[in-house]
Amino acid sequence: MVADDTAGSGDRSEGEKEMDLKEDGDVEMVVPASEGPSPREGPTEAAVEPRKWKWAVIFLCFFGFMCSIKPGEPFITPYLLSTEKNFTRQEVTNEITPVLTYSYMVVLVPAFLLTDLLRYKPVLIIQGISQVAIWILLLLGTTLLQMQFMEFFYGITMACRVAYSSYIFSMVSPALYQRVAGYSRTAVLMGVFTSSVLGQLFISVGRVSFYTLNAISIGFVSFSLMLSMFLPWPKRSLFFNRTQNQEQKEVAAKSEVAAMNPKEKPKSRWRDSVLPQMLLELRNVVRRPNLRLWSLWWIFNSTGYYLVLFYVHILWNKVYPATENKNIYNGGVEAASTLLSAITSCAAGFVTIRWNVWSELVIGVITALQAALLLLMGTTDNIWICYAAYVLFRGFYQCLVPIATFQIASSLNKELCALVFGINTFFGTILKSIINLIFADKRGLGLDVHSQFLVYFVYFTILTVVYLVCAAVVIIRHYRNEAREGAGADKQATPTELSPVTADSEVEPLSNGNSAKA
View 1 (cartoon, rainbow, N blue to C red):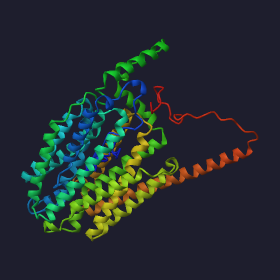
View 2: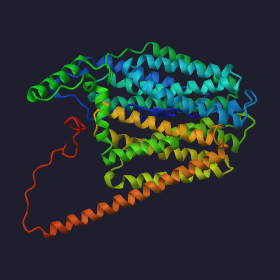
View 3: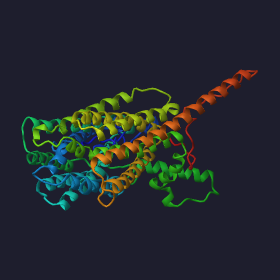
View 4: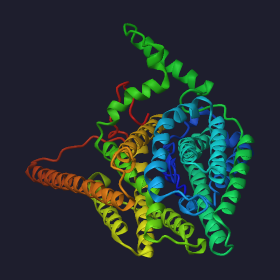
């Protein structure tokens, strides 16, 4: 198992405004900072009830921190392979772990829709119940089927994390979205880091057994389940539970358009509702090269990233089959990788280059480095080299997550942005399931873990070649266009007065006549 980055899932902003996943969390709602209230809309929520929203955000961040405290999580695989459970490495690799991906794929879309329809809190309670079920099955389960059910509940827990990442945006005004997203992301990262350090201290210093460590973990997840019962129930959500003020504005706008165009046929209620409208707009989103590139990166690279996270603990056990708990350092490695991920995510926010020109090259170089690290992990017999390669692998991925988040979110409204990230995550999950079924599942090739990592190396190598070829095309085209423009400027006989360009001039119109940023 892997620790929660919550990414993803995020997620991402992986400041994170994404939607996030297991251990980096697969999928967080991302909300652009540009979604601020108009001055004519009256006082913001922050001005009306500052204490109320501040305490609600503090409580939610504390909840996110406590949900991440599971000291036994980095040691689940060693526990299953130990004499306490006595499962074989082949059973864990080819029969138990693949269930996680299938479960996550099946539950993701219902969780996404129910999160908005039920206004977050019930889904967070379901997540807490699933976490308790995971650790009960780990403590008491003895059969292969029971461990498969444990992975099934893990998939539910991952899918329900979207509720936490999007919940916080229902509690504050749009002007505060960026700030509170940073708070919630920091709380989760601190929780993952603290959890990994605690687990390693219990194992290395306290010399506790895996069983005792899992008993401690069930205490923490039970406490987080109790906390979820006391979360405030939001009055609004992005799609299905919009505020009365929002609905009145939309009705007024539609009435005004109808008055200006009396011959225009009225649209059906279904087409006028928010979610179908967003789905119709997606066809225009995919035509924009920058959004298309980073969405494809999200789908393909996150697929490889999470497959590595799901199976890396099995690889460590094969490289170094420790016979004593004190010789296992999974918790320390997860803590180090989480810390490096947080540092690289933060540093990426200060990178200023022309992303419309250099995006493919940056992605290609980082993907090539990840491919090299996977080859190293799959061929080395030194556990410390394997540990170091894993830490760097995670750090490189997390470096690009906030950049992808910003590139996708900066030109979309919050509803469309959330939908784009949800669809990207869903397609990534389908791809993970297909790769799992072919290479890992016993019904497919049923490869051992070293062979799987060589498959992941080939996968990242193919992605590298594609990205670098695209980078060459984009860069050559860019410099050719610059040369033509320069030649045209030299031939110009008289100066031409240019009309001013507005800030929104580069935003492409959508099918309903609005801009993507409207």
